Image (cartoon, rainbow over all chains, first blue to last red; front, side):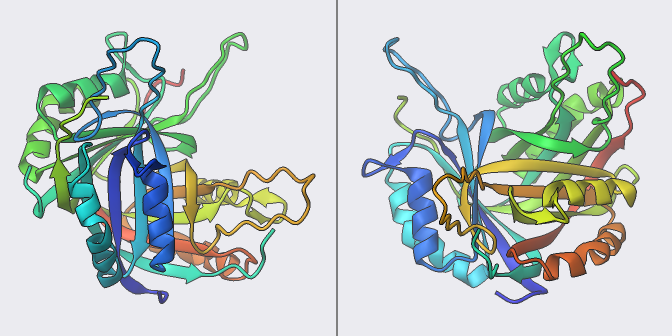
Length: 118
Length: 118
Length: 118
């Protein structure tokens, strides 16, 4: 990705306990993004929320539910994000959980790799 | 809200200790959004910040101030968000706290309800 | 900054352990933004991520590495953010760490200062 380029932000609003084949969904998305060479990924944890994936009904009181909202944000060129989304779309559509995925345009002012690994 | 629809992101930058009638402001906004049928809401907590609402002057040193910035982000169709904002605008304008509210366009690629409540 | 004005969001995707002259980079950016009169700043902490600045290789196992992704988001008029970015650009370009900086347009619906400092 070049400096001063038109790019996009692909955001997945999911739940912290959502899983794909015994793997947390947010890890699945981040590892997939890494594998597909997406420029940047950041997962942030919410403290409250609702939406497609956020209604919690726990019928078993021994169950410690720690479901909170998570946002997985990927930044790269629009076409790369669209191609990435196609690789996870079917998985997301067939989950038992709800899901909200948004895409917005953004400019990249600076993208530089670090040459130091501390 | 439909898949592949033009939508918006309404963001409230507030303080964690801001209140409306003894209720935390972020809870007030989330409950109001739920009541008005907004598609998704996520509250994230910042670790540092300043702005309209973030100058802390504590004159009492027995007071444990834990004011941090909060972002309440709502996602839905532009018109629904605009209508929602009108229901809380007066409340926000008349608070003793400062406040920053932004609106940006975003595409919704996927919105699906979960059919499982864990 | 006026209500109902066109504004922007300048976001720095950095690492929590990145430093500028022994100061954490996120604090440097927030203090600089405050000094330059930027309307709002919020720092949020991620729980996972990768990108320009996020590959961790710790060779010393006594070292407790707590590097997580941070997002520093500044909101103000487009021109003010562009001018601010110029004051930190060289610093960011010459760091040993990687860095991702994005800019997106957003509308400001409400910006009001608090008249109460709790």
